[in-house]
Image 1 (spheres, one colour):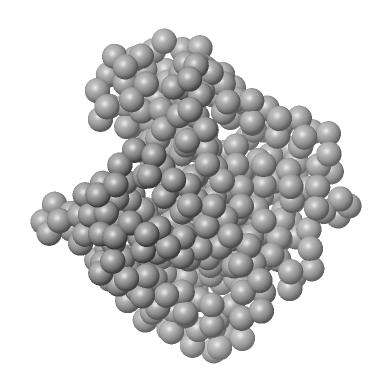
Image 2 (cartoon, rainbow, N blue to C red):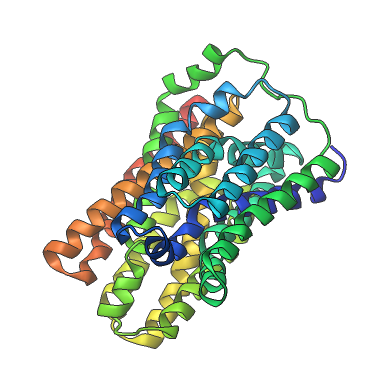
Length: 384
């Protein structure tokens, strides 16, 4: 494939636009609630339905479209996102806005799964984790950089300008894809039934469950990081924003490191990661009330979170290499499921024990993952 670096760059910007469309609404909830005259909880459904849509469609839509030429699929999904974003800009109905969130959520896993698959296929097999890690930079940026950007646009200008940012990014990627991405025949020569056979493998299911617990360990805590910083560390306002930015940029650094580790020492990297998370959460539990140590801990945690994102994707796709688009879709479904479970259990710890004990979900999920990774590595040896 020619111009591999350019293609990976376009895919990185593409997943930034897709993930920004998903997560960016977090920074707009107050403005949406006010403009559409709904409660904050009701406006929050704009985030929830998107996550639910991804979790449900993750294993399905990438499989159904796996036999269609890849460039056509990407252009189709990007067009849906542009149209949905434009509807969001101009509608005055909350019901229409909600619908404009549900439809792209269904196709979100298709583009993201393709981005991972195409990036991996654009290089030699041994360098695939590095190529995928570059695409993950777009994922991380979309999740942690997009939120403050659109919040700034909504605050300084208005909600429509902020919503237009989503449409603009996806439109740019649509044009870049049309002009610079070559025709890419589907890599799937297998029937739907033969692809679904990967779900009969114990290795696949161990990897899926481990991915769920990995994401629960990260997002079960991260979802309440602002609350933790306010109550435990006792910082507010700009200091919270700075801490969140540090986490986000450290996350991107973790993506880069992950590409190298998963290329050189994948098994060791997978096994050491939950131990590292337990240590970080232990330090956070002990030192989280002190601002400077908490800043340092947050940066280390952000790096580990970036490593986690790449590791979970690697675990699932390496267990089902003969169905790359399906396995990437399963990965997206698994991590969204893990986020939902982790956030729920983390909330229970906060309600019953206090904000500092939200860290328990991260520690418990990581302990379970140590066992799962040990089993997975032994299972992998028996398979290969």
